[in-house]
Length: 250
Ligand code: SF4
Image (cartoon, rainbow, N blue to C red; front, side, top):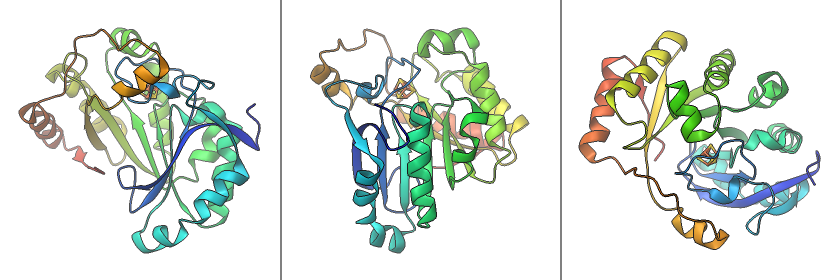
């Protein structure tokens, strides 16, 4: 059951260096309102499944406290990931407050599908907020993610009013969103709407395939691919041409 004291977690992962500064603990919360077929954490799309476990805030805090030394010497901290961490807002709030009160640096990876007024206080405590843009065409966005585009863009603008470092993440998937027209639309939106536009391109990978098998789910039957180095470089060059800073936490 989701309460302020407990919720569904897929994994607690120490020694992560990909989702924020320094050495971090990633907390993967279950549940997501999107249904992207390229999802590398398909166990995160539902709250309850064989790969999720009900976990208390106290258990997570005990786990995280053992890593404090690594955070201190690397400038790291905790990153909330998923799934979509804001789905379990009360649980997320309790963990955020517990870590914030201990002076632990916080980050969150989100698909942007949340009610901003409900989670504003949580997001305001994050040092870094990663928000995905998966497509800039509303029809394509809905087709691929099952979720409307406009609320995501509105939330990005709302988050930009906070003091946190905001990084827009784009999963780069040939056959879905890696075409020049879509990239230009994303970059235009960032340039025109954000105080300090930053983008991170995440080339599509197939690491999650084993999880589909473990969950007894069929692998997505769609025609998309990992971008070549040339295609990745084109995205980076476009971003530079639009004055959008390209960052990488990989
Ligand atoms: S938003 Fe992220 S976690 Fe949710 S289905 Fe899409 S890729 Fe998976």
